[in-house]
Image (tube, rainbow, N blue to C red):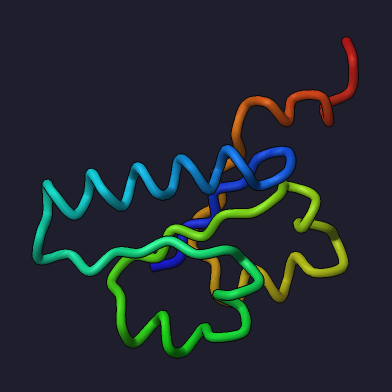
Length: 92
């Protein structure tokens, strides 16, 4: 399963993914989990899919666009967006 965790630039989501992998490895040693940047995962999707049960993918929210939404949907199962990207929402 691929879970894309994104934030404004990708830095805090990468730190979050690293902490998640550490915690999951301690709690569920039988679960094969890793984290990697979206570009890396997209270039080696099959390798990651075959080797791991859960892949926490990190990157910036600006990667998601109408032009590539279909392509991302082909292998990303869940997308989680960090709260600091609220600046993208229209003002009320």
